[in-house]
Image (spheres, rainbow, N blue to C red):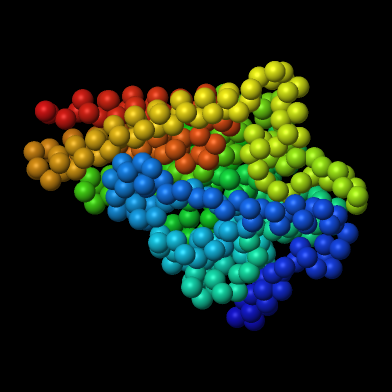
Length: 380
């Protein structure tokens, strides 16, 4: 208990760390740019935009509350007020530097603490410690999340750029270990960062996020697999040596020196970043190009998502009708699980195809093909 109290005290003391003596040598302009993330407050309800989601997520928290992520300045506020249940502290894994510090002090036992009892002690959002640990003053990037360190720590800087690996600690697919509810990722190296490989990982361990009552399908809920998408099949920019920071953190100059802006934004909103895009894209209208990709992917999401919803309804009807054996139903359920996984893998990746349109389209095509296969299994 003494160790826990010490860890909680350390976490509470960390609140506001970026603005205290430990960050004394950090350029004031860096801190000003970091604080500007409060401008990223826009959010939209995906459930209102795409009503079919309520049906395919039936029985899971995302059917109650699912909106686009706001900026890093709001992650604690948003996790605190979400209508999705969060009984344990593992929901805080990527929401606050305080909890990251607590896990590093206490170990995996921290993940199974009660959310409600711990949440009042969490004060800082994603902050300096999240990406730099105790290397804040010199700006060194550090893998601070234990599960990422275990999975790809050996490949950081040797196959995976540090500015991708560190962002990917949170921008990744993850799950909670059944035995102790610790946060973990379904891959062990860069080679296994793939939607098919991750599905096989979950299938082998018999894992499901929930069993849908109406269909009986043990379903998975994908979670923003940005690092897998950026590094995965069809990726272009990562293979060219570009990182998340290159595209979302512009280089800037100020009286106190040159620095990397810590205001995270779309490259389409930054003239400085667009100038670097022009080195390869020349006179291409980047906004037009990116929006065209996103429009195509979004249209396919709607098409495939509605087909997935229809499959879910057909399967629920078959379960309720009693005309199918459990063996027949399980055959369809396996296809349902697979189709939903590939659809969700694309849908929840936050770039809408901009990071890797090849992989986005492949996921949607795979989902649709599996849906069609499943529909052929029904007797009428």
